[in-house]
Amino acid sequence: MPLATDEPQAHLLLVDDHRDIRETLSRYLERHGLRVTAAEDAAAARRLLKASAPDLVVLDIMMPGEDGLSLCRHLREATDLPVIFLTAVGEPTDRIVGLEMGADDYVTKPFEPRELLARVRAVLRRSRSLPVGAARQKGDGARVGFDGWVLDLARRELTAADGVAVSLSTTEFLLLEAFARHPNMVLSRDQLLDLTKGRAADAFDRSIDNQVSRLRRKVEADPKNPTLIKTVWGGGYCFAAEVRALP
Image (cartoon, rainbow, N blue to C red; front, side, top):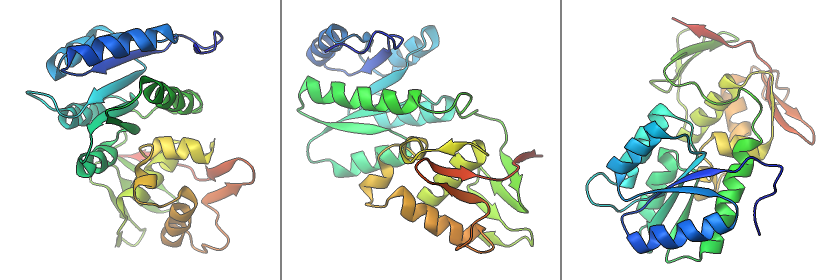
C-alpha cells in the first residue's frame, strides 16, 4: 500500500554492497510510494549525499572499505538524517553500537521487505512529527546555559552553578540535550525517543519516563515538584527554561 498522497514523497538513500539487495529493495520500496537512490558503498553514499537531499538512510553495517558504523558517525556529526541499519544475524554488539551511535532503528538480515517498509514508515512518521525548527543544528551552541546550569554539548558535561560537575548516563545526556535544544516545546514520548536516538532506550530496557525521573533528580531543586522538566498530561514533557548559547 503506497504512502498517503498528502505526504511529500519520501526520498531514501539505500547503501548496501550486495547488488541483488539494492535492486530488490529499490523496486519494492518504489512500488510502495518511496523514491530510492542506491549506493554500493560508503564512498558512493558520501557523493550522493552531497548531490541529493534524502529524508532517510538505510545503511548496511558490513561493507568493504568504510563500514556502515563509520558512515553513520559521519552522518551524526553533519546531519540529522534518520538512519536504519541493516545488520547480520548474531551480531548484537553491532546493533547496540549502532543505536548508541545514533541509528534510529535496525532490521536483521535476512528480512522481509515488508518489515523494512514498516520501519521506514515509522521512522519517517516520527521525524515528520517533530515541531517545526526542531532539527538539531550542528556545530553551533557547543555550550548552553539554563537556570544556573551549564551543559557542554561537545564534551557531554553538565556543571552546576557552583562549578560542581554532575555525571550523566548516555541516555540522560541525550535526553537533556533534546530538552535544551527544544525549550518551551511540548515533546511527546515518541518524539523524545526519536531525539534520543530512536530505539536506544528500548535496547537497554529503559523508558523515557524512567529517564525523565532520573534526570529530574539531578537538575531539579525539588524533583517531586519539577519546575524545569514539566509533565504535560496527554502530551509528553516540556522543558520550561530559558536556554542561551554560551561562549
